[in-house]
Image (cartoon, rainbow, N blue to C red; front, side):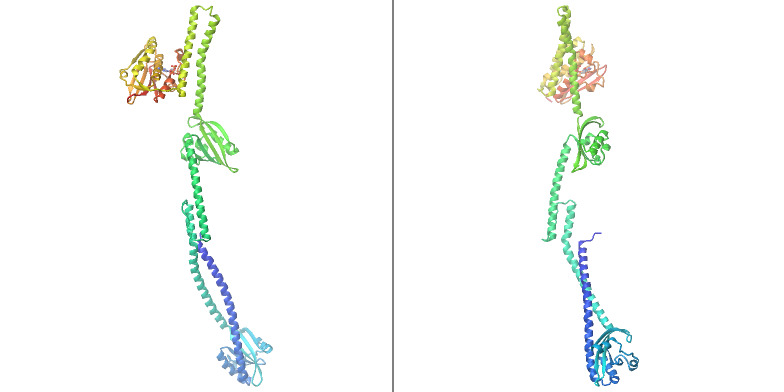
Length: 592
Ligand code: ADP
């Protein structure tokens, strides 16, 4: 239960006042009682002395004078007056008539009587069976005028003392109660004043606790509370600055993680993911929900889970290449690091570097080297073989055989030259060394020149080279003339090569507004659909033997694609096996 400090202060004030009141009450009660007691006793003694003087004067004969004197004096002093002879017989008593007096016991054994005889005065307090109450007795010896000894005894009921004490106690109690009430009120006011700065401090501290670090506790005094407020303000300022620093660092880290191309995750010591950057989420097609779940649950890759378990179990750093299915096969270079705080393992950090493209490039490079070697090997070994034969048997060979062999060497050297020239072109394009100089080019003129170059070949293969009507009207395009010529040669050459005798190769142009699409359509063999996505790759051929036989290098379409892309445009192909193919590419108009 929450008890306010004000009530605690009030309770302590009250306890203090009650304790002091109780001590005061006890002390006053006790000392007043003593004082009253001795006062009553002194008064009774004084009165007894007076009665003694009177008795010494008035009493001549005890039996005769004592009753009257006792009654007269007793009436005046409101105490019981007894006059007792020296043998203990009560001769006069202010409270008793003569008959009662006669029946009264002998008082010689009463303590006050004995004390008075022995010491000259006697005091006793006891219960009086005669009056049925506690009494105080004072006894003094005297002598009658006739010289007869006797005892004057004054008795006062203690009930009067008790009554006085009770009323005194009541007054005392009432005044103490009043004092308590007053002090309670005072304590309420005081505690409220004292606790006010504490209350405002508590409210300000609560605001700071809720995150309002800008709010400050008012410093109203120079005492300890003021000092506490200053310390708390100072603390709030420090926390505010610290939080700003942490949040700036967090933002910086977030920005770095967001900007990283590599996927990054952080897990806790039980393997639950507590942070995943956007690259990781996009790599595994996850949304923000992945945080708080286990790695196996979100990524479903046993290899990753094994690595994570190893890091958690053995605290070892792991650099591992793994293949994950997301859903396609991707190669990842993963780096797992245990996250430690002092000596405790608090989790792991893992970085995922997608090296699929690198792997692919490496494969392309390896394939390329293998392909180039393969392509070079045939002509080189043919040239070498025939050259060796000529060298060995040159003199004995008939001239027509010698010419035939030399012709073979020449055609393979041609092929080699062709291959090397294509390779050089391709490498120049790929290395970026090729510079384009686009100028307005008239397509009809360009196609005319290429047609002239290929006319003989087309004729030999009985293929008709034709252009559509719309092509003749085509506007000028913006292109590098030499490179455009290379593209057209490669496409038309392929069309002629892969079209059986009697077929046609048609060049067409389509106006697309800002661009023109140039199409080369043949009625040739066509390309199977499965090969279409790959025919622009280097050395890719549908039928390698046939291509080689026709002097193809397998690089023609790759060169076409690169040149067109260098112009910022694209190539496309549509083909039906047995019917023919249409290769097309776009170029910007010189004057759109
Ligand atoms: P190649 O030197 O073999 O012609 P390319 O890169 O020019 O090399 O062409 C790659 C492959 O694409 C060819 O081997 C051939 O199989 C196919 N191809 C290209 N053009 C045509 C076409 N017009 N008709 C049918 N197949 C073609």
